[in-house]
Image (cartoon, rainbow, N blue to C red; front, side, top):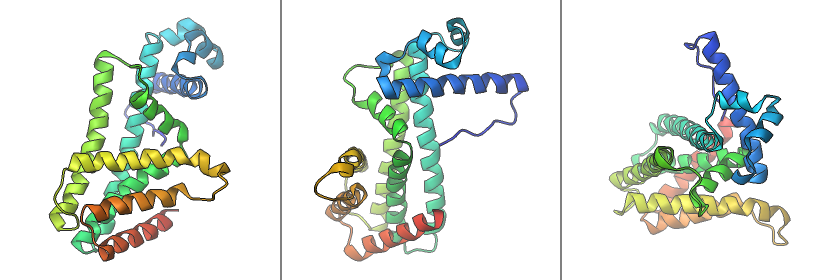
Length: 241
């Protein structure tokens, strides 16, 4: 989930943006290793071989850096997931409506899984902001972050509602269904570490599929339509590998 250069920036603006990204990258490493409390401006400056004053030229302080980390990480997820969904919609054009709608839904779900497995630090950071009982960002920054989270929930809810519209799922709350799918995703991602040393072999990704299948069947998906959607997902993922 790398940012691309913005060609319409001036050379000076590009240098400034590059320095901001370097500061955030270093801060990310510290937060992942030591938690938000381990982030200190002096330590961050030392890692970057800058003076503390130089860091303050870009950020007002630790809270501003943590807020920027939250927004950057979630924005990267959102952009990647939107790209995955857009590509899935193109792939779904030749499929029966119900199969296509379910395929787009599970493709976005699988996209979140794949992004999180590829960059576990980013996944841990987002969940830290969501589950830590302390509010790590406050004020307008917190409101902006939660609005972005809400947009992701609403996007997934809309995909479940599209499945209802095609008859692939029965009627139900899109938001509730989105929250259940996100809970399944985050729960199975928690299993990755355990699976590496578990005396009982299992695949967290297979567990995720079982959880998603159980949800979709419970919401009205029939076996044939669901199997066709998963089969197309496997072909799509293989083609992208």
